[in-house]
Length: 384
Image (cartoon, rainbow, N blue to C red; front, side, top):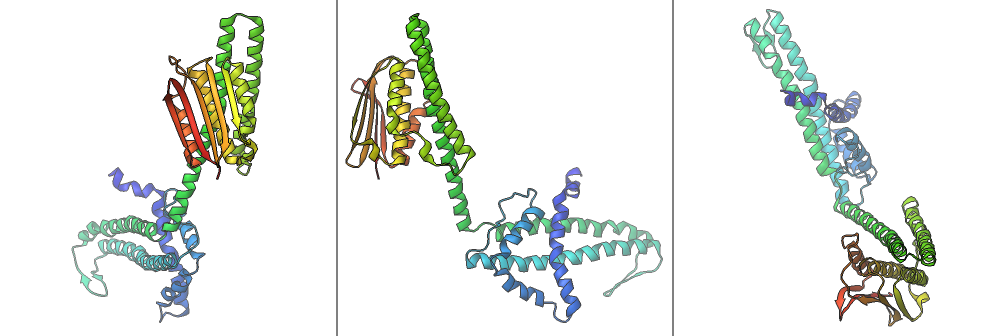
């Protein structure tokens, strides 16, 4: 019983019924002008529905009067961009007008029928209607009073559900709008993934360097080495704070340029940080890094950063060979280090996956894994 009566305490039941009644207001105004032609408002709805701006107005009404959540995206609030959308709007207006007529008839005559039955139960006179005269025992009329009320209740709920279903079909997003929404959602996911990679690479690198330096300083027991380690931790932490501020700036300011992110021209900072952590880094740069396009150079910097972080995290203080080459329209980047027993470290392999994702987004390719006794990261990124 509680489930049956639940629509009575739901606000959308009444807003949907009000939504059904709105077109009948215009019909009523017209009937005051000319009762001989009640079909004129339905004809006027055809050119009205062909106006592109009408569709968002109907969509806003549907969102706030038919849906349980005012932000329901099932109803489009964009102007009609195709003739198909315009004719869908016309059909919606016509259907809404017809259902409005049904709703107004039910709202008036079903309660009137209940009142008539109550009157018949009180009086002794038979009920006279335009089509028949009803004569029943006086007490029997009282038993029939709930029937029109139940019919009214069912009509209110049923027509409300019907108008909502039709609105979702006729006012729903067109294929073009769905494609645009999908593209926007894809862009948002790509942006979230990019920010996640930025945070993983910059902050992960800084924490790895700090952990390695602190562990080495504690094991060495040398005051001079400890001073150098603390200096390296300070420099790395300061750089990480700058990277973090860049990423947070992107989140705070949507129009902030990506050019504020570090590029391969600042690769020396990464190499010095790795050397300060005990790794023996042999670096070779071939070609002009300043000719590398900004997006490629920025992603190359992050790939190099993550590669060096993985060396420090999993191999420790080992010789590392870094090769950066700009030639034949391609940026080549290779980081190699001897394979050793893996040193457990934090992470779930997202760093290597991030390297492959960065390369794929730029149309390049990345290889990671053992190679001739070394662990290698080899990436090729096209410059165009």
